Amino acid sequence: MRDVIHQFGVTMLAGFVLAVCPICCAAAAEEAQVVDGIAAIVNGDVITYSQVRALSAPREKLLRQQFTGQELEKKMIELRQLALKDLIDRRLVIQAFKKESYQIPDHIVDERMHQIIRESFGGDRNTFIKTLEAQNYTLGEFKEKETERIMVQAMRSHNIKMNSIISPTKVEDYYRKHRDEFTSKEQIKLRMIMISGQKDTASAPAQKALAEEVLGKLAGGAEFDQTAQIYSEDSTRDSGGDWGWIERNTLAAPLEKFAFNMPVGRISNIIDYAGNYYILKVEDKRGGTTKSLAEARSDIEKKLIEEEAQGLQERWIASLRAKAYIKTF
Image (cartoon, rainbow, N blue to C red; front, side, top):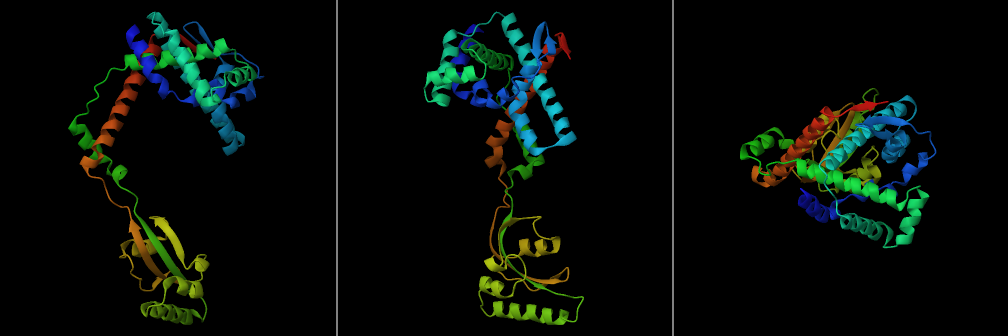
């Protein structure tokens, strides 16, 4: 196992996400002065409220921008509960690592520190140290946290043994049940002329006659965009009736049925809908095609492997929880 941990540490450095580093989460410092307390005890190890807030702070900032009042309060409680659960799971993994007397070589942590300084601070160690001090971290504390992250990742990799080969039957079954995932969205490039019918007034026949006149001009070779600029009465008039690329469920159902079934370049007949008259032109189409099983196979295999790894990890963590003393406050 020691060799496994050592080798893993060498190869994993490039894969760490910098966003989890305390120095990259300045938002965590916003609540540095709040009253602290014990959030949980895990086999004798204490998790504090400040640790929970430090982990949840970046997402809390986003929640405050999106929600207010009771909804914000509910979201904040849910977020902090998830953060506490994550911290408890991390502590269980670290305890399992230490119980086995495994070791992370010092040079692995040092390489990680050099990577952070190089990628986040342009190689300037002094700026790195000053940033730690500004966030009330000592260099030793930061190194300890990075060491724990490496421990967690190493233990998870070591304890999740799985077969990286997915059976063809599982791949085919997934493809059959999730064909929509491999079907590109159908889109059309649409232009439209809308003429108000005003059916509740005596002018309704005149408006219908106008729509027929417009259709006649188009049939005679008039440019659709120029005609729309003259006659159309909807918001796209100035742009020549241009709706751009649209997907299904953009138009009212009767209009969509016509639009998505029209050949490219064809101009529709007059469509009488909701008291108005519409003339459509589909300029182009794209999407709506489905990858074959052969084309989708590698993506499906990757997804199923990831799902299997996630399931194994959850079961392993659950086994650690089942054997632990955990008390939350």
